[in-house]
Length: 483
Image (cartoon, rainbow, N blue to C red; front, side, top):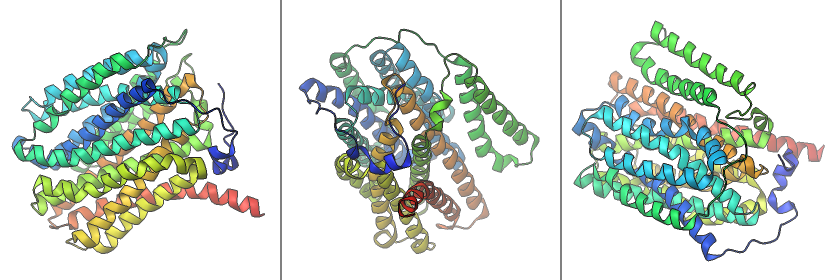
């Protein structure tokens, strides 16, 4: 495996400091492949935001509590995160095109079934299956992108376009979710079906065939122990507030989750073809990228969950009005992401990730400082959404570029799956804790926005920790230059 210089000084210099490779020609076929990959990311963003808007309506019709509603989000997130690494590795072994198209077909079917069921448990199951399908489409799409576009200017440009479509899907999902939920929440599940089928047909026509790896294998023991450990850990965090942290079942779940995760690490050191080559975790920039995506996704997804419940259930806003209130963040990402690739070329990923974490932290701190017990939209919510949008715009492309920078093509699926797993599982854990805090506030009878304050405090802390993790290495390098 070939790894470029990953020292802190190299990270600060960024891609612009390296010798530039020959410029890659952007042919119509190349644009077509990028369009298919972007369409799938668009669907992911569309699905997450549409379902988020519909949560209060789903809860009312199906009689689901706040804790149950978070499983509609976390069911998808956990299905997505638990098999991302296996999805990326499978793409490397069996061929990216085959895995991508098969998973996209499953995604379409799961979307259809989710719009037809009338039982809360079955709805959560369909969301989990849909997440499993996305666990194969997402890392495969990113690995197709990173192996199709040359490292440097072309890849940074492609990642910026890729990010725009994710943001556009999220923004469109907010508006469509508000409109469709007013008609019936089931339409938020059914709408992605024809879009997924169109992307499937286009993918069959445009994505070039690739060969499966000549050798290699699946680490099934690693996949089972990692998936089981993560699912059990999140379930324990969600159920512990009701059952009690010292309850024998809770303590047993913690012990079993820890044993499974330890077993995963032991397995990865012994098997011939590990799910994660643990040596990749010795690269500091990759570790920081994976922790940064936890801070980005974990804080942002949890904050959106709380605002959705607060604006609709407490303030009794319509789904469309609530969606429009959160829309500015998505618009900032959609219009700001195209410029991030150029900024990466000029400044490097570390400084942009620090800018992202700073913007996120300021957004949450501003909300805490000004919200009181009844946040005013123009003074509190709008500035917060603008800062969060800026943080996401700077962060997503920069983190993805840093997480895959210098990784050999044979392990791009691994690197892509690793960073996305960190984001999804981290988001699930943060959301589980936030849900427990919100549920506790509700039972306490605080009323108004008071019950959400502990959750907002938590997400702000997550963002600040993400900022510190990226700021400290840069400060060390700067201090060393002046020593």
